Each structure stands twice: as C-alpha cells, then as structure tokens.
Length: 514
Image 1 (cartoon, rainbow, N blue to C red):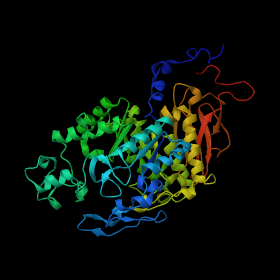
Image 2 (image 1 turned 180 degrees about the vertical axis):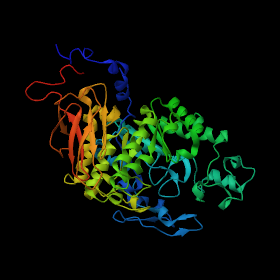
Image 3 (image 1 turned 90 degrees about the vertical axis):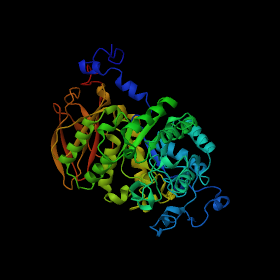
Image 4 (image 1 turned 60 degrees about the vertical axis):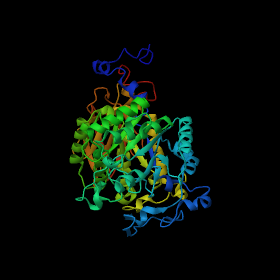
C-alpha cells in the first residue's frame, strides 16, 4: 500500500482546507501562463513587402529590417514625432509564420500590441477600433491566427486602447468640426486644454474618451456588437487594457463582466502603474508595473535584499492570490529599456529572470529579449526582431527555454502559493501546493558579495535530511537540516531548489507525507 494509491491517507488539516484549489487553478489557462509579447510591425518581415509599400504614404517612412529605431523630430502639423510613423513592414501573416518559434519557446499566450487601424506604428491612436490596420492584415487574419494558436494549445490576447483614440479618427473629426455632432459628447472639449480637448498625458494626438457617456461604453464593450465582444467572437481569448488605471474601477469592472459574458474564461488584464491590491476583482489580473521596477532595481543593486523582500512580501500579501496568478510579470516591454540595457551585468540579469519565472504570476517575455536584444529609451527598445540571434548556442535563449520548462515541469511554479523564507541578506521564498513533491525553494543573492547564511524554510513537510537539487544546475546539492538550509551564494547567485522525494536506494523521508 502506497501514498500514491491512497492519496488521502497522509493529508493533514491544512491540505484538507485547500482540497481542489490547485486543481481548479490548473484548469484555468490564465493562471501562471507564459506570455510572449509581439509588436507585429517589428516581429517578422513580410513576405510581400513590395506589394505593401503603397500602404505607407509620406510622411510615413519604410525602414529596412536591419535599421534600429532612432528618436525623430516633432511634426507640428501631425502633432506627433517622426519616429512614430517609421515602419518596418511586419504583418499578421508574417507573425503567423513564426508561431512555431513561440510555441517551441514554450509560451502559452501570444500577446499583440495594438493591431487596429491607426496612423502611427505603435497603434495607440486608433482610427477605427473595428478594423485591423491594412498594413497588418484583416479581421480574417486575426481569426486565422487565433485558430492556429488554439490548434497548438495556445491563446491570443489583444491590446485594447479604450481610454483614448487618435486625432485622425473619424469619430473625433466629426465631434471636433461640428458642435451638433452625435459624437460631441464623446470628448471633453474645453479651451483650457492644449489643442482644445482633454488628451491623454497632454499628447494632442490622443484625445480622451468620456467614459461617463453611456454611448461610449456601449460602443467599446457594453453592446452586443461592441469592440470588446466582437473580437472575442472572432476567437480572441482576452484583452490587455492600455493605461487601465485611467479607466477607473467601475468601468473596468463593467468591461470585465461584459467580456466574461461574451466569452466565459476570457482574460481581462489591465496595465496598472499603482499598487495592485484594490484593482481586483475589477480586473482578472494586471500588468504589474511596480513589481517590474522592484525586480529590476533588486537585480541592479538599487534595492537591498531585506527591503526588497519586504516589498515583495507585502505586495503579495495584500492582493488576492487568484488574481496575482493571472497577473503578468514583465522585466521589459515596448515602454521600457530592454532588460539587457537596464541590467547589463549578465549574472544580475539572470537573477532577475529567475525571479520573474518563479514568483507567482504569468511571466511576460518581450520579443527578442530572450535573445539578449538590447535597446534604450523609446524608440530604441522597439527594434525589429534579431532573428540572426535565434540560435541554439545563444545563452539567453537557452536560459529562457530552461526557465519556461521549469514552469511546465513544476506545478507549484504555475499555480502554487508563496511562502516567504526567514533570511537577512537574501531574497527567499517557497512556492508550494498541497503536495510535498511540488515544493520549490528560491534563494537569490542580489548583492555584489558572497553570502553564507542559514535560512529557515517554514514548511512542515520539508523533511529532515531531504536532499535539495538546484533545478538551474548552478549549485551543488543541499540537505535540509531540521527545517533549515545552509546556503552559500556567490554575488548575483540564484538557486531554484526542489526536494528529491524518491532518492536512489529506495528510502524516502517523505514516505508518510503527501
């Protein structure tokens, strides 16, 4: 008779309180997913570029794939910067041609920056939410991409920009030119604003929508044929909402409920640049800006271990864990310098990536950063994908693949809870479920000095004398000593430890622990 054959025999009271929790989490694709982010224009060169050149009329400019974006000049008549209308020619078809690469990386979700018709290359100035930018493709291409991903067991998430649209949008043109326009009340016209209308972050090209107007909400998400619902019916699995903090709690909750009504189990994730806790359940999850800053600053040595541990522990303690598992953890994206630029030291960068992939949440990988692509402030971080770096001998690609594989192999990293370790000079935590075999212990030394420390792992199922193996293969095996680990980590060292539940020789200290 073995514990495997009768799994309830060795449960304890804590196990029984969470019976079924982790199974339910595993059944929800949104929990702990690995997300791969793509700027369609920059991800893969189009196979039909010459036939598309007419779609980029002056003052737009077509760049060659090997060119790196550079800061341009302000164009007063266009009310934007010239680098915002430089294009590299990628499209949905070319992105679809590279889906196998994303699948091979191990990603569960493909997230696309805005693809709706817009004037700029970034797409945050919608001309028509319902139409795909012609240089990128069509709604049929979106549906085909979604079908392809679903056939591979993957999901598709789009970027929704519903706080503001583009100044060239026909709805805004009508409202701006005609005081009697039915769309006049969609915008806040007032001479106290530069350009005569409230615009996001004072960018005159981005007039804000008045969400208090029920017609606006009905158009965006409330109505049967609204933008949010329509794309979900096309096969899209969720939305990442730009500047979600500007939409506010009430309208985010309405939008989330509308999306779930249209497609049960869909994801509504908001870009939140403030503290996480109270944005749930208005959103399923958040794009976690504050955690990004904390992780990068820990790796770069700007936040010490003890203080960093307190920030992390408080952030996770205050927020609902079900929503935090759905939240995206990112180290760089289209709005930040790439990680290789922000943290140039290789060991420190590896530490940041290890934390990103082992903390509760869904790691968000920005295209090309898995290859070690660099790039500073906007627009440098939006360079075209370096496919020449996508080789098996690329150490950053190998590390990313290993970290993704660890999440697939270890249930606790996908859907487990977090327990903070007692440590003074290290970042330390455990991911755990109701099964001892699932536990993973993470210890990181972000300092520039070697740290030797005894760490308490407060887990009653971590049996004495159990061997612990570093899943990253960076450190020798350790042994648990009555709930303690004696750790010796080099500068910027990090270990991801798992217990050997069934060691060679047949004897296991876990024989009566589930």
